[in-house]
Image (cartoon, rainbow, N blue to C red; front, side):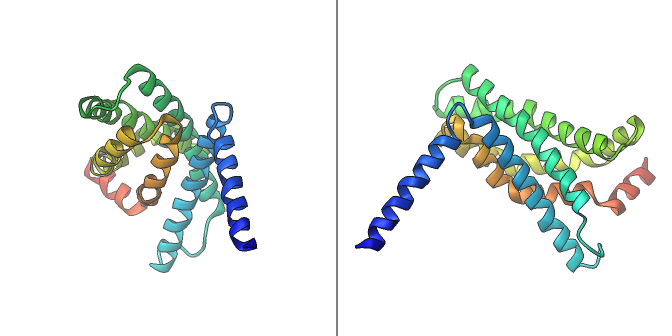
Length: 198
């Protein structure tokens, strides 16, 4: 009986924590924290994969820190974007959901990709020309991947979830995408090939 009561207390406490984290008062901080954590996790996974493949000698905490900070900037954008979009376009009919998906892909996706490269460019102290070249060489790869991953994911997000859980869901789906984002960002061989072709 004490095991059942203990489980009940644990479930009750978990619900209280969830309500507190996802309350209107704390939602911004929760969303940004989730974005930082999962961006760092995605980079750690990608770095370990690159170490196993022999592309890197050891884990770079600076690279993970930079990816986490980029997750913070993108998390801020996503938090405000979802609040704005849900306030402006209300409802859950399939027509409204599809409208939100299209607007999200056309507005938020390029904005987040740009914010990602801008944040990392600042952290890496790149000059304007280096930043433009990197965006030119790599952003299209992320945008193409966005069109594969996000429309189906966002249909679920906009149809089933309330606004307060959108960034959590987004970042959970994004964990795999964050691994790819880190790979694209730090793929030196491909950026050299791209710049040679220009």
